[in-house]
Image: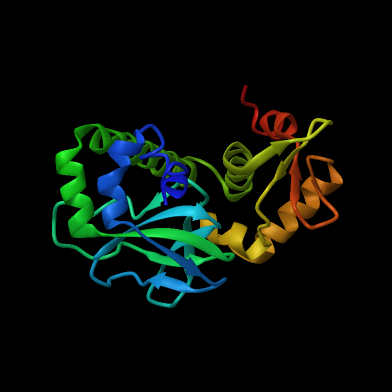
Length: 227
């Protein structure tokens, strides 16, 4: 259990002794691909920490259209809101590949935060980073056209999930379909298809043999005319 907890950002700096109270309330569980962890609007009663695997956080509108909020990986937690109050899950959570998660009842986690201000401060920092990221995405939608939003999305994904290659390209370690890319910025799959085709012709993006995106971040920045 301690090796699982050490993989979580909030807990990795704790000593073995300090991890003991966390072990008492954490429950490791295995989840299958495409398994729904919770639905938007359900009572918020648990918090999740990812030891292995990937989880998609997304919202749906009244017509059922999906908007991907984030793709979370090993070491991350979710949800990031709703502590110290009665509330509901703000979005849906779906397992993207087989995952091992640590599940902690929200009441127990809140009690842990109150007893450990250092963990609480780390949580606030993580939440602050999420707020800044969401604000940046909102600015992109307000001030940039769809083509520019797709380019900015590629830069963001390169930073979050990129693996530097020997050449100028960065490979995304997560495979995203064009529909999933579209769902991240609220556009259509057809628009992403056309944009990716254009970028491939201009050698700004490529596809690996396994279908992962290869992105020339320098070329993207030149296209956006940013440093």
